[in-house]
Length: 188
View (cartoon, rainbow, N blue to C red):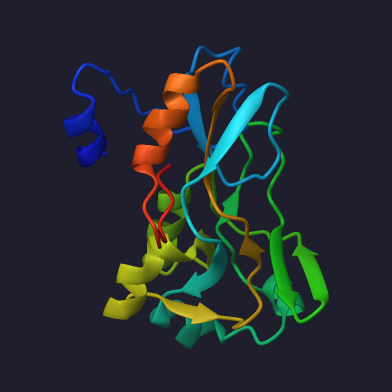
């Protein structure tokens, strides 16, 4: 963002974080960042990151009290910090994969949120397991505040991309100046 603002000081940037699928045009946005490869008609995408994955994490204290899940089915017997979609209102099932096998586990727990960082904070407090973007929890994993479980099961996601109206060719030029080779974090 700093490089972009230095290059384009007259462009005002508003960062709105939405944990839901946003209709970019209808809601008055010029561009958005998505993890989904699906785009609307008359839209253009510019890749921002390499593919990344979700991980299942828990605080060492939680794991010591409740045990470490060894199979995706074990999550059904654990407290999980669940995520409610702002788009559909439904609880999001955790998507896991191992080899060619995939699971969509309808986890439950005593804490529900619609915000990824809140889920991670609740897991750090020992309130349950969380399903999080791996880049978001790297610091907590390195510091030992969280531990990964169910390796190598978490699902890989496509790269994040900037999405904008095809008619805004000026954004194509600006968007390409934001793209960094080897970027591994999604701007949300």
